[in-house]
Image 1 (spheres, one colour):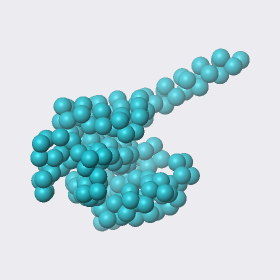
Image 2 (cartoon, helix red, strand yellow):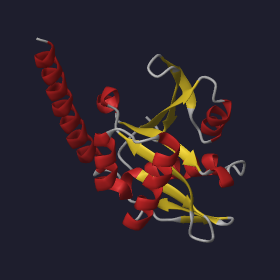
Image 3 (cartoon, one colour):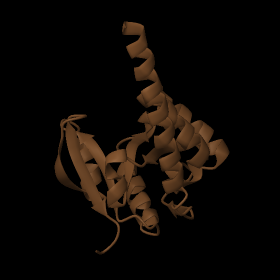
Image 4 (cartoon, one colour):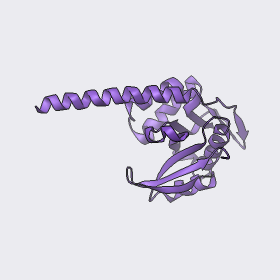
Length: 187
């Protein structure tokens, strides 16, 4: 009986992951591919294929292996779901990966899953600047909000989100964090 349940559980998640991937691809195709923006010594843009390959290595370095269906999604829709900041030497200093959360499908929200600024670039406000670029770019989409989650003890990330226009909507139990939202459209 145990092995049968394990197989059923595996097949359930395999089917669910395929449906989530398909639903995310469909929603991602509605996102614009924004132009790049230059400020100070940095360029903000969405990733090209070559840049995505570098960005995903940075993601794995800081966040681990990742969820397989999300990696497949980003491999397919990197130009719409992977935002990067590059320095004057063309090196990626940071990234933001987006997705569509199943619980938010009906409320017109794009979800910022993670922002990573490489260690040597931290302390320069790049996280806030990258989030502001993402917000500005996503205002051109059909989506009404951006959501994100910030751990209760990550005060720097919380302040960065708030500076970029996010506000705490509620507390989340899984994972234990603040659930923040940023309005893209006047409703």
